[in-house]
Amino acid sequence: MSVAGFNKIWVLEWSSRQATFHIQTVDKMLTRNMETYLQRRNADSDWIVVAVAESRLECQTICQKLKAAFDAGDDFQQHRTGFGYK
Image 1: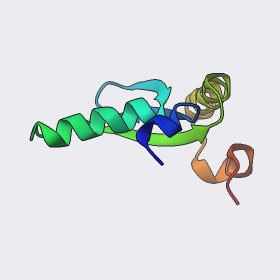
Image 2: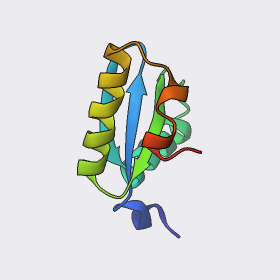
Image 3: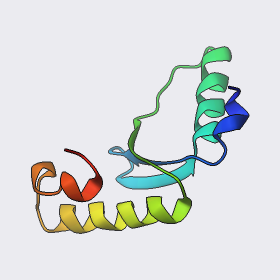
Image 4: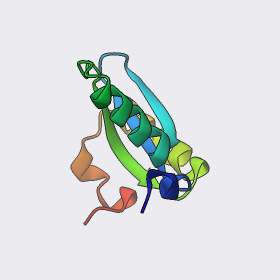
């Protein structure tokens, strides 16, 4: 499958350095990563994928839940099942 085949799968990314979330399609994320590699640039990015979803809206919903959990001081174990983890 080519990278273009991932244009309908969405990722929610988090940057601790910038203290912000970012939503994009998997194909855009992979294209950026490949460009970074092929241009031999240092990957000075701290973006990590925290969720994969079928739509931008689903990523936005997860993002809101994560922000609420963080603001409440909750830890991951308290929300595992709500985010689809066992």
